[in-house]
Length: 95
Image (cartoon, rainbow, N blue to C red; front, side, top):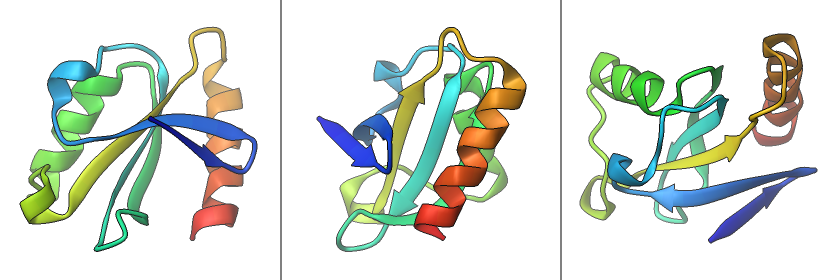
């Protein structure tokens, strides 16, 4: 499913990391009853690894019973600086 946030299109929400690969991108950890409350927005060169680390660091468990979800935006050809600017733009929209 696609989630449109501003000018960005995210895939998700995911409750299973098996569908996510270690590629450059932006991820949002979000939850709540409406599945839209963002907990964390981050850019990374390695999506799956970074998400796993963030979930562990914050004791979050993915799943509907835990109201914790992941949405991702792949950024194959985007530089790190550009991803950081994208995160800043998303934060102004979501936070």
